Image 1 (cartoon, rainbow, N blue to C red):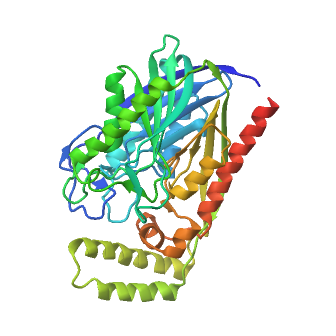
Image 2 (image 1 turned 90 degrees about the horizontal axis):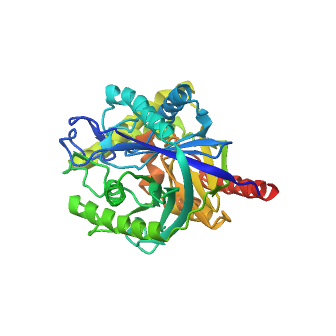
Image 3 (image 1 turned 30 degrees about the horizontal axis):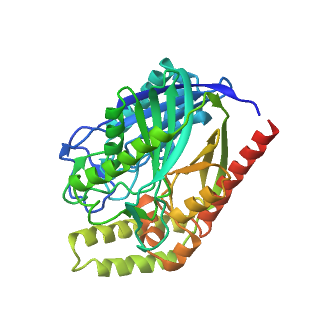
Length: 432
């Protein structure tokens, strides 16, 4: 097996929007942001093993759609020389960040802010490229039981805290990737319209305070149906701080236990797949629209807003169905990055935890961490079993994100694709 020396560089830029910008993630919000609780950042970890150069970008945002991903990649390739296929962009999924992609009735996009983001993120890549140094790498994990399956308190969840550590040759921490599976919804959407990175910001701030000069990058897991436990970790800034410190403390312990090595086996694989869409009949959508207009009467303000989203969806798709102007599938990109005995699996969606756990269990890697909201965000990816039970994530979430839902079994297709990519990587390593 051939090993190469690792070089790593980091960059960090402030992407905090101005007060007054619309936030996204909650239908219950009634107005724009009113204050900044903590700053938002985009961070870059650049890795180079002399053969392959990979940029891992994290951001304190709800999500990044494929159009913005392509703009960032194209500009980065032009300005830095890194091939765009090797640029990975993820979001923490904070629900207290700016509206930067279409989410029906969940905040208006500020185009000035949106247009400024690619250059800011590319600046972070350039910073990372200018401070590359020889590095050592290692991975480890722990466990913190602060999350819960939001459909079943006794149901599946993933409480693993994953950490990938990068040190320089003087044993100084350069960066760490933190991975945890939990929706960043500590703050109430209707009463706390503050700009915030939510609990991931608390984790990263703690690590960067303990290790001055280092950068902590947060990645969220398969948290489509996973949230923080109530009431201790939900509702206000105290809950957010408590949640972040519990996780941050565990990360600090893990960092102390990780053994690092200068040897590197870096492999990036990618596969684009088509997910078929479930196209409804025009007559069924018309009936739904009629019933919704009746049901809108005598409802709470929040419920009226929710029903209004469904009305707008019907009014949008009926003419598309009548004219047959719609796509029958959606293309997404699955990526895997293996570093020695560790794998990162990048999924452009809110994957249900059962699917993430199966990828981990079948990865044949010592450490395997799922990174959701990466290289796009098409919304929730439920399991076949979840479709049978119904619920918001299955029945109506896609009406916020766009037009038509993906077909049942799409989550299993994504899971199988990721596992196949990992198995191909292992076979390649054995040949080397």
